[in-house]
Image 1 (cartoon, helix red, strand yellow):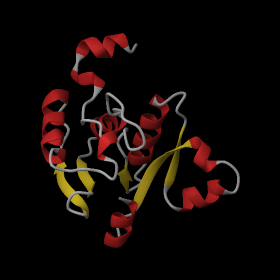
Image 2: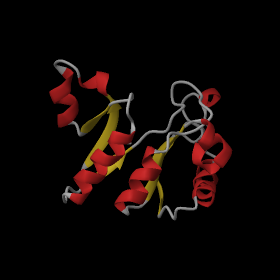
Image 3: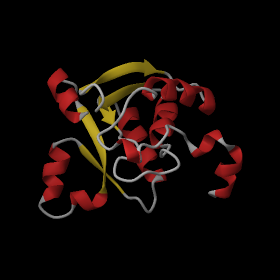
Image 4: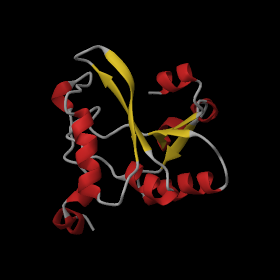
Length: 153
């Protein structure tokens, strides 16, 4: 997605685990638009990104879904919370191994109806397959199922 953004001349930021920003890699990762994520307290990421937006910083934010290296039951919800709290839409991007294409899909406003919003996202990704299809995680947030949300607290 970063390559697509660079090709289109879009100023991008991306989220990466904080270990990528240690030592000599830190300045390079930040110069490439990276924002370090402390996985021990992911709620701070949403606040940090929203604070940048509220301060007037203009950028696109690339957030890759969970399940790119190992399947998980749910996507992480940070992208959704950032979009809602900042009042910003979400543009869906893809790398489709089946058709050997990449690109940007529709831009969607997140309405607050998590299940309905995720239904639109699932519909877009239904015919897309990543590099390792066996690790695909269905686009689903824990917040879609209130019982699962309560169990995770």
